[in-house]
Image (cartoon, rainbow, N blue to C red; front, side):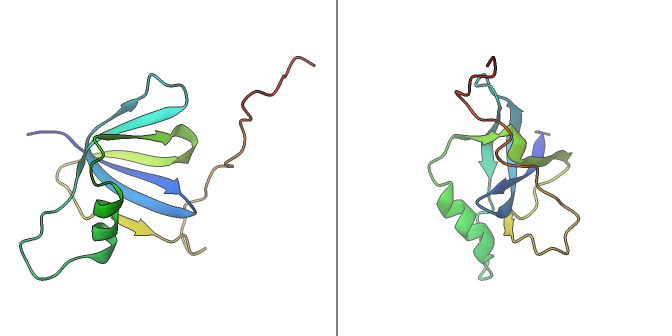
Length: 110
């Protein structure tokens, strides 16, 4: 049985939850590689609009690089669930890391 990973990360003020075949550290410093995105191929009349939006957003993407500080959690799961986009509403127990803790090109020796 192939590995399935659930990755949750912040993107544009929302929490994305995706399922993928592979998640690993990128050779590019500060990024996590998410490969083999898994989406349902609906054979019923009920379609989840959130998953449909994600499928459209990542259409044609072989792998995506997520900034390490945006990643909330990576879980290895037994089976794929429904990918979704969630609005953090203040009732969540998830708190984002500061998004601008690293400033590239800044001279720290002076």
